[in-house]
Length: 267
Ligand SMILES: O=C(O)CCC(=O)C(=O)O
Image 1 (cartoon, helix red, strand yellow):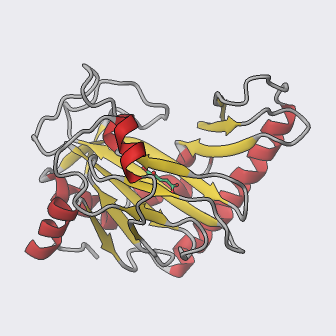
Image 2 (cartoon, rainbow, N blue to C red):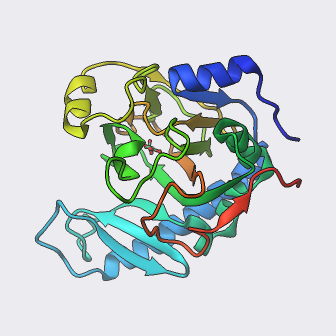
């Protein structure tokens, strides 16, 4: 079923910078994604164990495998201190992730938010945080990662030209490192990333306590973060990001990136 956004939904998205829709996917569907996420985790462990140890703990290491890219941080090697930060184009290895990212229940909402029947998918990603694994995301705007202000990004609609979506695979709780938004923080557009981190580091923000199967949709300017998982269960999310055609010229990893897709198709 396609979710028709109300004028109030659209207002909330444009004013607050984000919108939450509950129960977009069923518990059975997210259970399949959870199983797929655990297979990706197991592959990640095997890859990490074979990585040579690195002196440089600060830089990321990227390993391509079966159509996905596994991104690690930490020293690596068989000592086990290497951490899987994200799986890029997760649907390459595990099609359930791409099925979710291309599902009309998700893309039709993106289409209404972008005001377009087509978009270019840039991201299809798994972020998994396990209890006390230390993985956290500092306050940021996604416009930083999309390279706003450089020749690689052209804001074709004057409203950011980008929508990121997060589907919860697990229930988010206050303890397990939920996404935290700062409503209305995007009203002045793209900001200096260092000042964003400094200004928002000590502010509580509004946690998005998404139940499994619910989704958050957000524009490129709203500041958000997520803390370490201090809960007892994983917090896994599926991220898909969509740009208006003509906005992005930076290459992204993944077999389906860069190609305009139809957002309103049925089924
Ligand atoms: O995994 C997280 O909580 C961070 C997600 C995030 O910052 C993003 O989708 O831009």
